[in-house]
Length: 378
Ligand code: SOE
Image (cartoon, rainbow, N blue to C red; front, side):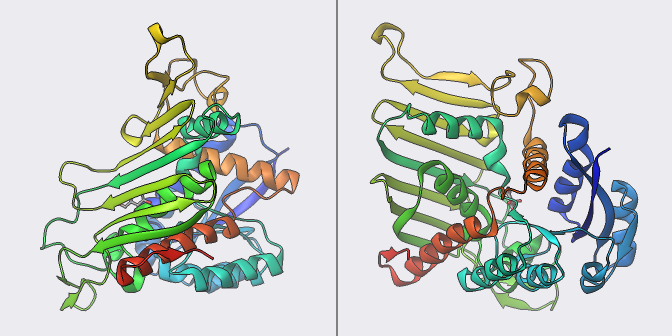
């Protein structure tokens, strides 16, 4: 008999759906000691929360997150709110002894993130942050190839995350989905929303980043705020590019924007080592490109590995070789790994502490964008 893990989810947007889907699917495909139970969803609008609960099969609805946390029948709190609420909810959930799964980025800034780390560590509660792209099988395979030393010394890490959905000046800031354009709710723009993904993957694959120099831009300076109805200054970064140095001596080149017309969610990275290179593209997420200079010269070239075989990460849990999976499966993998960690009493990354490292890089990037100076990461 599997042990129930009663989930209380706070927020119900795009990520609420991605996480709920993962909780529902995970035990169908992974053999686990724990089984998530969708106990309650919490949102201020009762009718909307109820509609979400009906669609996804949550047993009950709350409109006050403090009440949700106080419920003895909730084991784990999933924080899917805008970023400015992560800290208060996480600290309260930790004090109540709840397991915590928190949407990325960890917090508004490093100072908040530090407080959150202290709270979960003091309470000794299991915790994880939803940086889901680590668990796309092709990305996990990249990690395996790097850890096996196949690339040799790494010289370059290059990543971009490009979108184009905020180009219209008529788009308001604030409110459902659009809170990402409101600095008070999001903390930052593309740096915390998109580059944070690239940084999390990079720290995981290639180790710490020591220093950065960045440029940021806000192309549209004022937008109507959905909540106040008034035209207000836009305080987020619409675009950000930075250079950096990793501790292993390799050079970092990162770029993110919501103004790259034609790109919806183009997250790519390429890593160049002395023996081999790796490249990945979210639009073709089940493939990993690999070039090995040690191949015989007459057949040397980029190979496109279709990551669907049972001996490649996570794939034995899905279909037969050749049949691919997608974006939503990265969340299922995260839940599977997290539940396995709970059973073995082992932390599973990215923990709050891991995500704090990403937060530090984001803060350094934003500070450098302002000061136009190199910034060291402590
Ligand atoms: C923004 O458009 C967004 O939805 C991010 O918030 C997600 O984290 C990213 O994975 C896709 O883009």
